[in-house]
Length: 281
Image 1 (cartoon, rainbow, N blue to C red):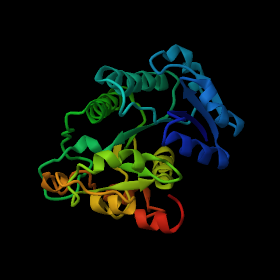
Image 2 (image 1 turned 135 degrees about the vertical axis):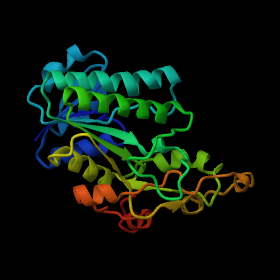
Image 3 (image 1 turned 120 degrees about the vertical axis):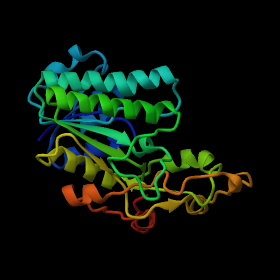
């Protein structure tokens, strides 16, 4: 399989691309700084330096590609305008380039934050109305999903959307970086997570399964974890103010029935505890 990946030096991409190379896939990566991706080049990836918005610089490299896996995104640390340009405009530019190069499949990495709190008494499902909280990241992802689905309907983009939860594992500092935010959440709040190994599994199932164009899939492990548990496991205290914080019991908890039934997804690490016990954190 010939794979074209964006975001190869990010948290997900830097763990996903080596897996694909180890499996013998031919991988091209589009990065803004080729120097930062030299370690991937050393492992066998073809590194292209360029900007998502400047498709003329990479559209030729897309010819002969079996699937684009779009992982590049801006989350924290940038302004709203930059987030929109990166997550929305960049995604649409890449999708149009993929159409121009006749790439048959396009996997878009989204987030379960697009659901927001919702108003239902159950985990979030793929067909639920999206109500992203006012934050540039989930809003830009929801907007990109809608625009990409339109390209699927009108121009035949071979789109598959995967909505990722909080991703962790394999020495990723994500949890540690997020602890200051978690301390301000009600300790009873639960959130879904997924290990990098399971994110990679979901991405490849979405990339390789025939007949699922236009489908959306929630990705998560089998056991949402409470904020109090994560804080305790990382020797961090709950703030007194956090105990007073309101929360919706199903916010950041998703239904994974569809990906299990349609793609036969089964988490390698069904919970954070199983990953910890396996030494995979």
